[in-house]
Amino acid sequence: MKPGPRRSISQADIVDAAFEILEEKGFAAVSVRAVAAALGLTPTALYTYFPSKGALQAAMIEQLLAGVAEAVPDAGAEPAWRERIHAIAAALRGRIVGHAGSIALLTSGPLDGDRSRDVAEALISAFAEAGLGADEAARAGHAVRAQVIGAAALDDAAAATPEETPAPQTLWKEPSRHPRLEASAHLGLDTGGAEEASRRWTLDRLIDGLVATA
Amino acid sequence: MKPGPRRSISQADIVDAAFEILEEKGFAAVSVRAVAAALGLTPTALYTYFPSKGALQAAMIEQLLAGVAEAVPDAGAEPAWRERIHAIAAALRGRIVGHAGSIALLTSGPLDGDRSRDVAEALISAFAEAGLGADEAARAGHAVRAQVIGAAALDDAAAATPEETPAPQTLWKEPSRHPRLEASAHLGLDTGGAEEASRRWTLDRLIDGLVATA
DNA sequence: ACCTGAACACCGTTCAAGT
DNA sequence: ACCTGAACACCGTTCAAGT
Image 1 (spheres, rainbow over the protein chains, first blue to last red):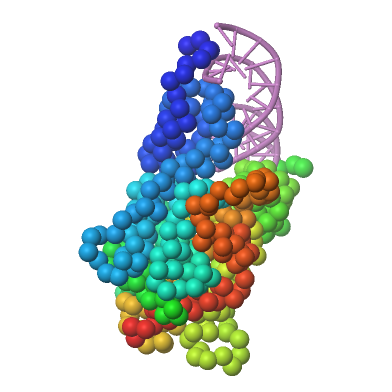
Image 2: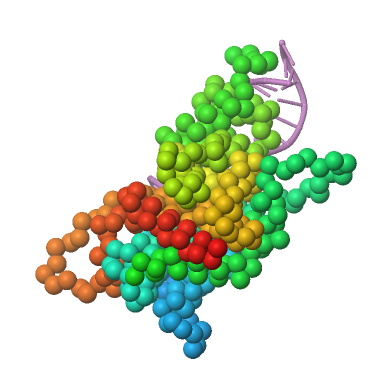
């Protein structure tokens, strides 16, 4: 193909192509060259749209977070602010687990985009509605964001764990150094398989503790 | 230098050299080639000690987490289990912020090493001591780990934010879309400058909520 | 066992040039 | 404005070979 204007490609097309690679081959595979190739372009052509790989990643984060702040709680639930927090947390988590490897994207650079701020603002508002003062509400919103992102990071790390080698047949069991951790394996907390009930319990306990000061 | 046995280098030396590069030049600069060069070795020589870059990173994580589970609370504090949780959380956080860029290391691969399990076990034990049942204690320990790691990830993202361009002089202020977030700027939650008091408040609220079911 | 040197298949980014 | 092609300074990893 000859060089020259082609006009048919937008920033959104590039971000879409990047997400396709992210989901299919993981975060490490999202290279400028791979994204360009997926679009039938030369790597250097992408620099017409984004000044750097980091700028492309920032655009990906913004798209990932779009709409999370507007997540609407299930109808009829009370109190409204608590359900709004749950809805936002679930939406945020859903976006992350819905795009495999995106936690690496989220922790790869600054989280200072508009969509990221929307999420923060929505959470602080919910806690203000719950009766917290300005500072406490801000700290509470931050705590919820940290909890969701941290839990997703732990999930992702667990999912990256290679197949567990089946325990070799031993006659006497060594007393484990981590008996309590092993006894909780059925919860799936460290295998990326935590149930919705566990997540909801944790978030409710966090909210309880945060609003108790109101 | 001629090839041949040199015997004077250990796995620990390699991990130390890798941390030096991590702290001075960031996570992205920790390449097999750079670590080898820092030790006066050829890149391929490192493959005698670690089968892959991932194995080296896993060894770095283990060293980062060494001793965290044994963190001892400040003397005389009560109740002991709450202070133990604070001590472990502070130690974990201290290791992360003490090594710039190490949150990327922590979220780069599986967190299934022995030291990582030690931290999990210690937290679960503390919550069991607080009166929680086995499942709740496991979920509570997981929540604390997620909170610390998530907060560190948010801090790191904020620290990576490029210098804020000073607000251009405008005659009329646009009404902000994020008034509550901006009003909380003095807390430093999103600039990596959160005070110890904020972190302690958040963790105490989380603990309060978690143990309220006991 | 520990190491080198060459090689393979990749990176992000810059630059001059074409249309 | 949008694109190509060549180039620069990097990657992780493998392989044959030396001591």
